[in-house]
Image 1 (cartoon, rainbow, N blue to C red):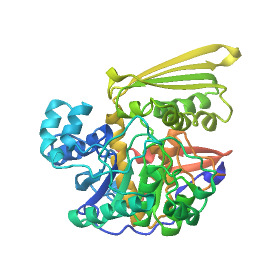
Image 2 (image 1 turned 60 degrees about the vertical axis):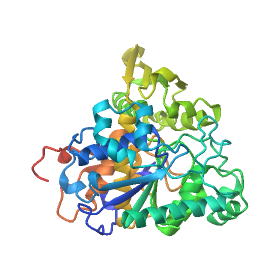
Image 3 (image 1 turned 120 degrees about the vertical axis):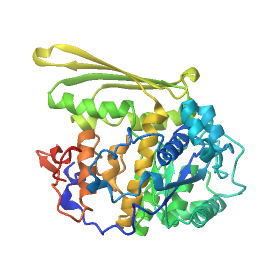
Image 4 (image 1 turned 30 degrees about the vertical axis):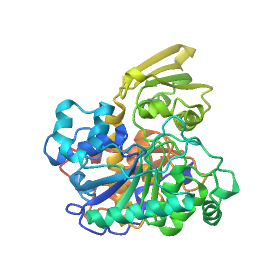
Length: 447
């Protein structure tokens, strides 16, 4: 595990180029018409209008000395693809995430934004389909069309830099052991052969990497984590990160589990169930897409506590009346001193897109910073945002504990600060990270 641990001394960064406080950044979103994307775009529009504050944006309460490297929220410019052609105001009305007064304040900007035709494949996402499709006849043509969209977006908006964020519905998982996914050369040959085993998410990731545009995968779908695309990203020095945004139930799990482990309370079982009724829930009402999601949600406990939690059960159910108001319920069975049994119950009544949209915005800004620092391949410092953080090598064990992940992120941000900074210590003690974050209190006057 220690090979995967990061500390401030391990970073060799290049001073970021550009003036992020004034420059604009293009954010191309896969799934632009979805609930998360429309919420993110509306949030930035409301920030620009002075109609909301930065509550809920994870990096907004960090010291300015750490975050002034990042493009301002108000300077994010949006475009992207969706299988539905509706403008974002119409889409937002259907998703019913925004309050009426919020939608009214952002409606002009949302109405002006219409998705570009998207790549779809019912083989990989059976429950979410649409007719707003790229008019292409092959994978190779789709990749070229996506690249052309990125080029046009850059030119039309007059932005120097772009990032791609995947907020689309969950796809079925391909078999990554197949030879076509092993090397960039094999993958390119499979694209040219129009191999039906390549999912849409990979085509977007491939196009982004070829355009030297960072790719952030907020979904459980397989994309840049395919070995071929990961190697290509490293070769071209393109930042990639993912996968599956850690927003509600798994976020709580990665906060609580380290605390239980620190108190040596043995976890006998952890039963998790979710109900949700948005488009993401509809996609997960298909067994193959659901399997991809369960994989990312179910992988965290064993790594955190250091033993196999035999009775770790995760269920996700589509329940249309709930819409974007997801309910995540956990029952935790623990054993304490003298073998006494105890239970913990958590009922998190989430607003799915309200939790996810701010993370997507932060990932766009952080991916851009990684690109300006000339970091390629997996940006491990962004693991705090994901249920199943990518690692550059299959032999490495990803870190799941939230406090440890947050310390790594803060170290990474601090590594790009030129002025002397109090460094957050991330020490390895018997193979376990021990973060000390007091120096990063937002109330500290020392920074």
